[in-house]
Image (cartoon, rainbow, N blue to C red; front, side, top):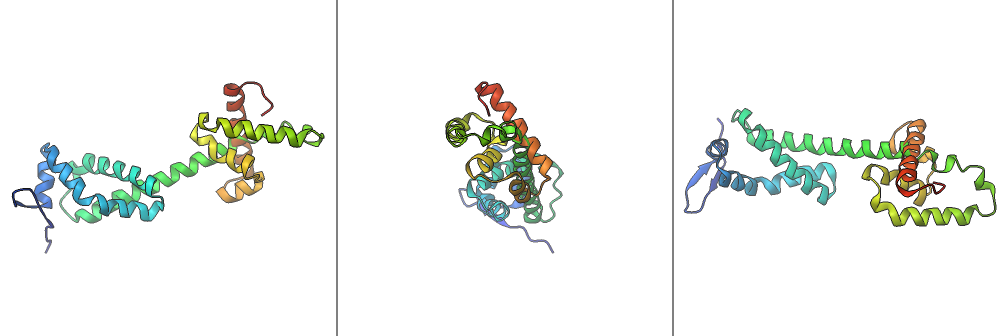
Length: 196
Protein backbone atom coordinates (compact mmCIF):
# COMPACT_ATOMS: atom_id res chain seq x y z
CA UNK A 1 0.00 0.00 0.00
CA UNK A 2 1.45 3.35 -1.07
CA UNK A 3 1.74 6.00 1.59
CA UNK A 4 1.78 9.70 0.85
CA UNK A 5 4.47 11.86 2.39
CA UNK A 6 2.89 14.88 4.01
CA UNK A 7 3.95 18.50 4.05
CA UNK A 8 2.56 21.39 6.00
CA UNK A 9 1.57 24.74 4.63
CA UNK A 10 1.21 27.91 6.63
CA UNK A 11 -1.92 27.73 8.74
CA UNK A 12 -1.37 24.04 9.51
CA UNK A 13 -3.15 22.67 6.43
CA UNK A 14 -1.96 19.10 5.83
CA UNK A 15 -1.30 18.37 2.14
CA UNK A 16 0.04 15.18 0.56
CA UNK A 17 2.66 15.19 -2.20
CA UNK A 18 -0.02 14.02 -4.63
CA UNK A 19 -2.23 16.99 -3.76
CA UNK A 20 0.73 19.35 -4.05
CA UNK A 21 1.57 17.94 -7.48
CA UNK A 22 -2.03 18.42 -8.61
CA UNK A 23 -1.82 22.06 -7.52
CA UNK A 24 1.44 22.48 -9.46
CA UNK A 25 -0.13 20.90 -12.56
CA UNK A 26 -2.98 23.39 -12.29
CA UNK A 27 -0.49 26.28 -12.42
CA UNK A 28 -0.03 27.08 -8.72
CA UNK A 29 3.40 28.76 -8.57
CA UNK A 30 3.42 28.85 -4.78
CA UNK A 31 2.90 25.09 -4.70
CA UNK A 32 5.94 24.56 -6.92
CA UNK A 33 8.07 26.84 -4.73
CA UNK A 34 6.99 24.78 -1.74
CA UNK A 35 7.83 21.59 -3.62
CA UNK A 36 11.31 22.93 -4.46
CA UNK A 37 11.86 23.96 -0.85
CA UNK A 38 10.89 20.51 0.37
CA UNK A 39 13.06 18.47 -2.01
CA UNK A 40 15.97 20.80 -2.80
CA UNK A 41 18.36 19.39 -0.19
CA UNK A 42 17.53 15.81 -1.11
CA UNK A 43 18.02 16.31 -4.86
CA UNK A 44 21.16 18.40 -4.33
CA UNK A 45 22.58 15.47 -2.37
CA UNK A 46 21.71 13.02 -5.15
CA UNK A 47 23.32 15.20 -7.83
CA UNK A 48 26.42 15.91 -5.72
CA UNK A 49 26.89 12.17 -5.09
CA UNK A 50 27.40 11.81 -8.86
CA UNK A 51 29.36 15.00 -9.56
CA UNK A 52 31.36 15.47 -6.33
CA UNK A 53 31.43 19.21 -7.04
CA UNK A 54 29.04 21.35 -4.95
CA UNK A 55 28.88 24.35 -7.32
CA UNK A 56 28.18 22.19 -10.38
CA UNK A 57 25.69 20.20 -8.30
CA UNK A 58 23.76 23.39 -7.48
CA UNK A 59 23.55 24.33 -11.17
CA UNK A 60 22.48 20.84 -12.22
CA UNK A 61 19.89 20.67 -9.41
CA UNK A 62 18.25 23.77 -10.91
CA UNK A 63 18.09 21.90 -14.24
CA UNK A 64 16.58 18.93 -12.39
CA UNK A 65 13.74 21.06 -11.02
CA UNK A 66 13.07 22.50 -14.47
CA UNK A 67 12.91 18.95 -15.86
CA UNK A 68 10.63 17.83 -13.04
CA UNK A 69 8.30 20.77 -13.67
CA UNK A 70 8.18 20.01 -17.41
CA UNK A 71 7.68 16.28 -16.77
CA UNK A 72 4.98 16.55 -14.10
CA UNK A 73 2.13 16.26 -16.63
CA UNK A 74 3.40 12.72 -17.38
CA UNK A 75 3.96 11.74 -13.73
CA UNK A 76 1.65 8.86 -12.76
CA UNK A 77 1.77 9.17 -8.92
CA UNK A 78 3.93 6.11 -8.45
CA UNK A 79 7.10 6.48 -6.38
CA UNK A 80 7.77 10.22 -6.40
CA UNK A 81 11.24 10.02 -4.83
CA UNK A 82 12.32 7.22 -7.18
CA UNK A 83 11.05 9.18 -10.18
CA UNK A 84 12.80 12.40 -9.09
CA UNK A 85 16.00 10.53 -8.22
CA UNK A 86 16.11 9.01 -11.69
CA UNK A 87 15.75 12.47 -13.27
CA UNK A 88 18.47 13.88 -10.98
CA UNK A 89 20.94 11.05 -11.69
CA UNK A 90 20.33 11.28 -15.45
CA UNK A 91 20.86 15.07 -15.43
CA UNK A 92 24.10 14.66 -13.45
CA UNK A 93 25.37 11.97 -15.84
CA UNK A 94 24.47 14.16 -18.84
CA UNK A 95 26.41 17.04 -17.27
CA UNK A 96 29.49 14.83 -16.76
CA UNK A 97 29.30 13.65 -20.38
CA UNK A 98 29.06 17.25 -21.63
CA UNK A 99 32.12 18.19 -19.57
CA UNK A 100 34.07 15.22 -20.92
CA UNK A 101 33.11 16.09 -24.51
CA UNK A 102 34.21 19.69 -24.00
CA UNK A 103 37.58 18.54 -22.63
CA UNK A 104 38.01 16.19 -25.60
CA UNK A 105 37.18 18.94 -28.08
CA UNK A 106 39.68 21.24 -26.42
CA UNK A 107 42.36 18.56 -26.45
CA UNK A 108 41.80 17.94 -30.16
CA UNK A 109 41.98 21.66 -30.86
CA UNK A 110 45.43 22.37 -29.53
CA UNK A 111 47.45 19.77 -31.43
CA UNK A 112 49.15 22.30 -33.67
CA UNK A 113 50.18 24.80 -31.00
CA UNK A 114 53.70 23.42 -30.74
CA UNK A 115 53.67 21.04 -33.71
CA UNK A 116 54.05 23.89 -36.22
CA UNK A 117 56.88 25.32 -34.13
CA UNK A 118 58.82 22.07 -33.74
CA UNK A 119 61.88 23.36 -35.61
CA UNK A 120 61.98 26.55 -33.55
CA UNK A 121 62.04 24.44 -30.40
CA UNK A 122 65.65 23.55 -31.17
CA UNK A 123 66.85 27.14 -31.10
CA UNK A 124 68.47 28.75 -28.08
CA UNK A 125 65.70 31.30 -27.71
CA UNK A 126 62.94 28.72 -27.49
CA UNK A 127 62.73 28.54 -23.66
CA UNK A 128 62.26 32.31 -23.46
CA UNK A 129 59.65 32.24 -26.23
CA UNK A 130 57.81 29.39 -24.56
CA UNK A 131 57.68 31.26 -21.26
CA UNK A 132 56.34 34.34 -23.05
CA UNK A 133 53.73 32.24 -24.88
CA UNK A 134 52.63 30.68 -21.62
CA UNK A 135 52.44 34.07 -20.00
CA UNK A 136 50.33 35.48 -22.85
CA UNK A 137 48.01 32.48 -22.87
CA UNK A 138 47.58 32.57 -19.08
CA UNK A 139 46.67 36.29 -19.20
CA UNK A 140 44.10 35.74 -21.92
CA UNK A 141 42.59 32.41 -20.85
CA UNK A 142 39.36 34.08 -19.69
CA UNK A 143 38.68 35.20 -23.28
CA UNK A 144 38.91 31.64 -24.57
CA UNK A 145 35.79 29.45 -24.97
CA UNK A 146 35.38 27.05 -22.07
CA UNK A 147 35.76 23.99 -24.29
CA UNK A 148 39.35 25.02 -25.13
CA UNK A 149 40.64 25.88 -21.65
CA UNK A 150 41.17 22.39 -20.20
CA UNK A 151 43.45 21.15 -22.95
CA UNK A 152 45.36 24.45 -23.01
CA UNK A 153 45.98 24.13 -19.28
CA UNK A 154 47.02 20.48 -19.58
CA UNK A 155 49.40 21.16 -22.47
CA UNK A 156 50.83 24.59 -21.67
CA UNK A 157 50.79 24.85 -17.91
CA UNK A 158 50.87 21.24 -16.72
CA UNK A 159 53.27 20.44 -19.58
CA UNK A 160 51.63 17.13 -20.35
CA UNK A 161 52.39 15.37 -23.59
CA UNK A 162 49.70 14.60 -26.16
CA UNK A 163 49.88 10.98 -25.05
CA UNK A 164 49.41 11.84 -21.36
CA UNK A 165 46.40 14.00 -22.19
CA UNK A 166 44.94 11.27 -24.40
CA UNK A 167 45.46 8.63 -21.69
CA UNK A 168 43.90 10.79 -18.97
CA UNK A 169 40.87 11.63 -21.08
CA UNK A 170 40.51 8.17 -22.55
CA UNK A 171 40.66 9.40 -26.15
CA UNK A 172 42.83 8.63 -29.17
CA UNK A 173 46.08 10.53 -29.70
CA UNK A 174 44.68 11.88 -33.00
CA UNK A 175 41.77 13.32 -31.05
CA UNK A 176 44.16 15.27 -28.81
CA UNK A 177 46.11 16.50 -31.84
CA UNK A 178 42.91 17.66 -33.51
CA UNK A 179 41.73 19.57 -30.44
CA UNK A 180 45.08 21.27 -30.03
CA UNK A 181 44.96 22.27 -33.69
CA UNK A 182 41.48 23.80 -33.39
CA UNK A 183 42.46 25.74 -30.26
CA UNK A 184 45.52 27.06 -32.09
CA UNK A 185 43.32 28.23 -34.96
CA UNK A 186 40.97 29.94 -32.51
CA UNK A 187 43.89 31.74 -30.84
CA UNK A 188 45.28 32.89 -34.17
CA UNK A 189 41.88 34.17 -35.25
CA UNK A 190 41.14 36.02 -32.01
CA UNK A 191 44.60 36.91 -30.74
CA UNK A 192 46.43 37.72 -33.96
CA UNK A 193 49.27 36.08 -35.81
CA UNK A 194 51.53 35.32 -32.87
CA UNK A 195 53.26 31.93 -33.24
CA UNK A 196 50.76 29.90 -31.21
